[in-house]
Structure formats: C-alpha cells, structure tokens
Amino acid sequence: LKMIRWLGHSAFEITTSNDKSILIDPWIDNPSSPIRLDDISKADLVLVTHDHFDHVGNTVDICKRTNAVVVTNPETANKLSRSGVKKVIGMNIGGSIEPMDGVKVTMVQAFHSSESGCPAGFLLHIDGKIIYHAGDTGIFSSMELLGDLYDIDVALIPIGSVFTMDPYQAAKSLRLLKPDVV
Image 1 (cartoon, rainbow, N blue to C red):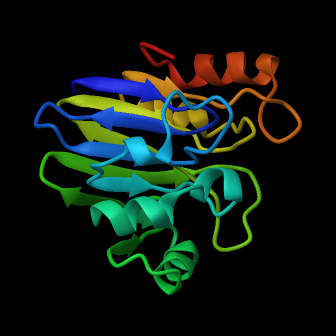
Image 2 (spheres, helix red, strand yellow):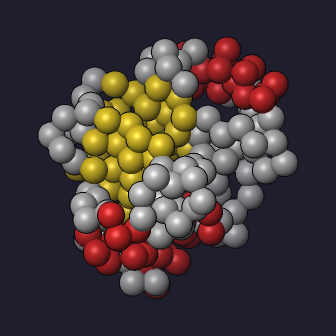
C-alpha cells in the first residue's frame, strides 16, 4: 500500500504497492478536493457506496476517460451502465470479489438512503492491510462484528451529523470497529 489520499467529502484515492489506482465515491468537483477532474488520468477501480450525487460524483467521466471498473450495488450498477460506464460489477452486502489482482473488496452494510439499491460500505483487502470505507452511515451495532471479523488497519468514517454520524456516534463507532488508524 503506497498511499491513501483524501479528495474531499467522502472521496478517497488509494494507490497499491503495484501502482493500481482505486477511487472511492469520486466526487472530485467538491469544494474540498485538492485536485481537479482533469488531474485524473489513471483509475483502475472505482467503488461507489450509493447513488447520491455527492458519492457517484464524477464516476461516469472518470470511467470513460480511464476505462476503470466500477463496483457498487446492482441497481446503481445498472444506472451507471445506462450512463455509458462499460465495466460495472454489481454486488451486494456480505459479498466479496477480487476485481483486480491483489485487491479484494467486501461490501458491508451502511445505514443511509439511496435512490437505487441499498447504501453500503467497503472493506478493501490490499497488500495485507484492511481499509474500511463506511460510506454515508449512521452508527450501527454490527460495527462491532466488523471489528471482530476483520483486523481493520484504517477506517474512513463520516462525521457530519444531519446526513451521517455526529462526532459522539463516530467516536463510539471507533470503539466498536477497533481500527489502528482513523
């Protein structure tokens, strides 16, 4: 694992040790993003937690430019396919896939809303590390089960209140998840 970089809002870029580029919820046009959409010339995998505009973001443009594979829930996968994304994998809560060599993705629950399909979080198994991206979610007691099942190295947790957990709930979620780094 070379790098995890926050791109504002819920967007992250992860670079693996063999230079594979993974984007999660790539809303690059958000006001906190340190990069512009034109700065993205490479993406191998895009993970979308749910179909709200601030999470699907620039997925279609990025995939048309880079030919990246998208992983999301089946209903959002269908929407993205209809929007011109060529490589889309639909999966559901509890499933695991290996969309590219050296990267395993497990889809886990999230409690939020979504126009198509159910919202999700992702566990990424990369280079012997586990990264948990919670998506947009409120706290839920099964976070403790995730912490017990997986030795989470890095947790990417939303703290915004109104639409996600507030700081008090997020702090409790970390006691449930037990990650090494947040």
